[in-house]
Length: 445
Image 1: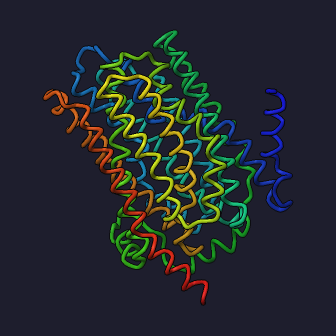
Image 2 (image 1 turned 90 degrees about the vertical axis):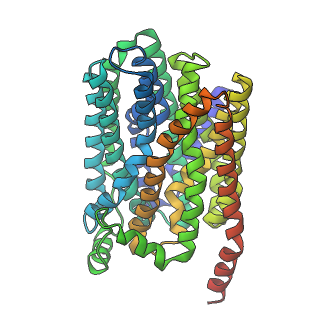
Image 3 (image 1 turned 30 degrees about the vertical axis):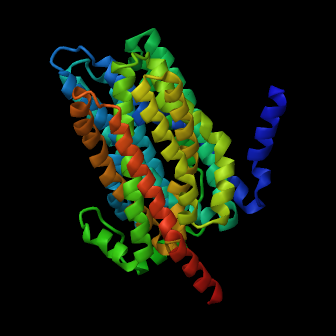
């Protein structure tokens, strides 16, 4: 049975399932994503949040309030780092994309390896926060620029399928990385001294394979970028607002994404805190709930969401897909209110369903708005706004939850997240008529 299942997976992911001209690049990218996520798992917000919370609890010179802020910071790092997206989009403008991405992958690996050297002290705590932010910042560059590679290498008919396969591989490997980290740290809290460098070595291996990817139409893309308007710069926020003023529909989409995303991002740091302080989870169980289980669900749901995304506009997609996060926040609210681990696990499953669709929408959704030569600009706007809400959400969450918990109404914090998620999804529903009118007009033209 297992061998038949494995054979089916290999058959479905084999390069021969794609047109001949896509196979070589697809094979190189797919293999590289068997290794790169191993290192990325070390700085996943849910993983590092649990590690920081447990490893630095009770360390002299670190107060509970300071530790909770640090937990909020490391869980926020993947999203706050998105604020650097405009800088990467600007630096990559007019340059060869694959070498640029490969350089950022190496930087990420070196920073992740550096976490192994931090002392277990107040200084070490904030060094972990700084290294996590820097590693996630360089990885933001990978994500921002990679979208141009995907758009040029894979046509519309194949792009969602390819992205789904890449994301599925990343999800499985991230889950494996989280499992290894949890088990190793439960066996010995000092295991990170050798484990993080080993994970970084896996990243170097993935990088050596990724360097062989070739970007189709590289020279044409460079000419288009250099002949067109300059790339967006994070130092000039006017560029962000200019793009949003030009594209009203994209502006509305970003507004409801902000509301929806704020509710989602507020949950993670508080979930991490209560798993340690209220449920007293081990490293492995905490990482299982925040990372391993949701990520393991993703490969099962990605093919379903990929089919939906390939035939619908991103707004239509979000209006359907977003309800999985609403359900997850409802389960998490119930788990906190009734001190229920089964509901906690149920929330992880619901979030995994949501993350599966969200990972595809994150990488491909802006294509429904962006002209080809401004692909990185639109992605940079999306990623940067995610960084703004990522900067706000975790610290707002801790600022709200701590006094609410003292007043004995801590579970109602997740009720706030539930309301924000619901309002965000309804925003996508309200946008549907405008999207359909635009599609009809484009069809007539």
